[in-house]
Structure formats: C-alpha cells, structure tokens
Length: 143
Image 1 (tube, rainbow, N blue to C red):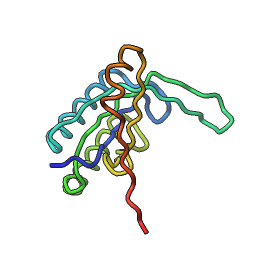
Image 2 (image 1 turned 90 degrees about the vertical axis):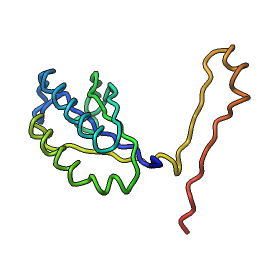
Image 3 (image 1 turned 180 degrees about the horizontal axis):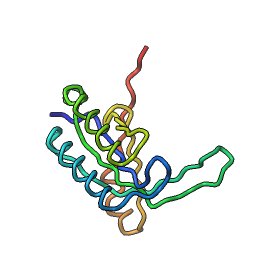
C-alpha cells in the first residue's frame, strides 16, 4: 500500500455542553478508536495536542491542553472500503462521549506537501543543512 492519505481523528476532552469528560471515558474511547483503526488500516498513532479557539469572532481566545488526535496513513481505496465502518465507529464514540458531531480530516500526503526545515543549532547547521536540502513537491496543474 502506498500511503497517500493521512487521516486525523480528534478525541474530545469535553462534551457538547463544554463539560470535561472523565479521563476514563476518554481513554476507553481512544483505545477503541486505536484498536479499530489499527485493525482496518494496519496502524494508528495517538498524539496529544493543544487547541485554541474563540466562541465568537471578537470573543476571548481559549487555549486548552488538548485532545488526543489519532493519525492513520492509508490510501484512497482502503479509505473507500472502510468508510461505512469508520462512520459507524465515529457515531458510536460520539454518542459515548456526548458529542454533537465527530470528524475525520483527510489530508493528501504527497501532492502539494511542503517540508519546511529549520536548523536550530550552529553545529547542526554545519552538519546537515547542506547535505539534506528540503524538497518541495508542486501541486499538479488542473488546467
């Protein structure tokens, strides 16, 4: 399988009324999502994340130690075959976590991707910057 998609599934910390969810519920949902996605797609990785948002455009910015985000590498065909099972899983976990909605965000992992490399120490700058230049792939022209 040539992984050409990255799927991101956020696991929320709060319910639909903005009340914190019990850590045991979060962990149980995360384990079920990891187990299902790992089984369907070959692997899945959970990462911690932080989030920021405003309730209203001119409102105060909230920054919260965030939810876990589950990442999966796959291809479009496998995603199509697993789509209905994935939607069932999201509905199930969304109800369990008292959510209005759950989401999967799919990113193309090749076309249009850009690697931005930033060397942070002088010793690394001399060692690796010239030998391993960052490469960019250009999006294909549509017209």
